[in-house]
Image (cartoon, rainbow, N blue to C red; front, side, top):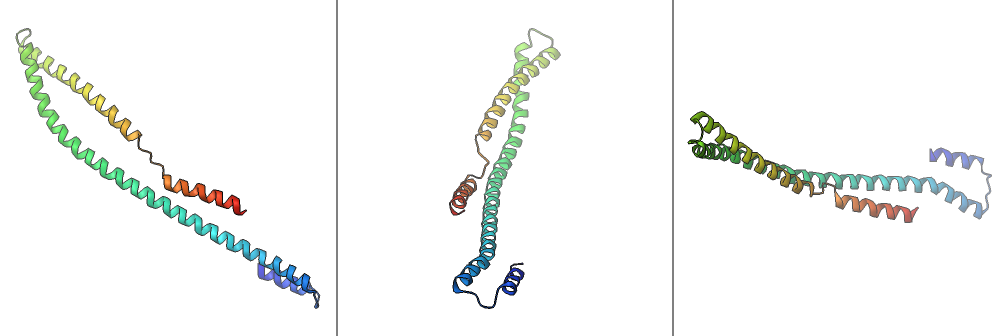
Length: 158
C-alpha cells in the first residue's frame, strides 16, 4: 500500500522538485513505515507480555496443584483414622449410656454424640482452610505491574 502511494506521488510530482519539497515528501513517505514499525513493536511487546502471563499462571497452577494433591492424600489418611477413632469413641460413649438405656439405644446415642462432635470439628477446619486459601492472591502481580509500566511508557511516547 505504501509502495503504491509512493508511485502515485512520484508520478504526480513534477520532474523538477525543489530540495525543500523533496525533504518534505521523504518525511511523508517515511511516516507509514514508522507507523508500521511501531505497530510491529507494539505487537511484539504484547506477545512478550502474554508469554509472561502464561508463565506466571503456569507457576501458580503448579503450586496450587501440588498443594491440592497433598491435601487429598492427607484427607484420605485422615478419613481412615477418623473412621477408626469414630468407632472407638462411639463405643466409649455407648458405654457411658449403657446403664441408663438399653444396649441398642446406648450404642445409637454414642454414635450420634460422636458424629455431632466430629461435624463441629470438621466444620471449623473447613472454614479455617477456606480462609487460608482465600488469602492467596491468584492474580499475576508481576505481569500486571509490567502492563502498568508499558501503559505509562506508551502514554509518554504517544
